[in-house]
Length: 182
Image (cartoon, one colour):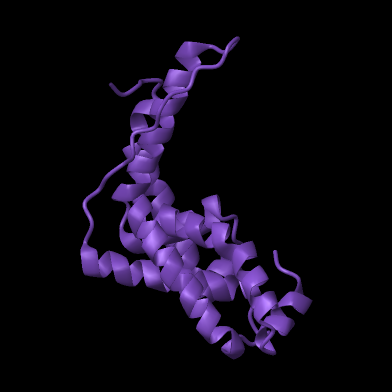
């Protein structure tokens, strides 16, 4: 993800290295925040707060943990705090369907509905289950990386993922039966 030399330079006070480092991770930070919070504005706020915290705490990063899990812990904790403070309403941004030439319009519409239903199902998961699903399936973290970034035992992470998959399966039953929403 990020070169170790860049991290060391940022830790030693090299302002340009720190700015470069923050630019390299900002998309990753925002994506994680968006998937956890499901709201663009909240995700931008959480991302900004996370980047500021990383900026001020870079000196405390120790190589015991991978840099990406250290970042992930910061972003996730900020999102969880924000989620608890706001108790947000569930909202899904409407996605504009863009039909391209030589594409199956019906397929594209069904895909858009499926994506919307999957996001809706993820939003309905309890906070701890949603977080591990986002980290595992959308951020491609290993079980160990999730455990480290959330400061949870490995078996708890596995349990959360197992329960989340069961809940998603139940919530998305119509698609398994070949049905469609709407």
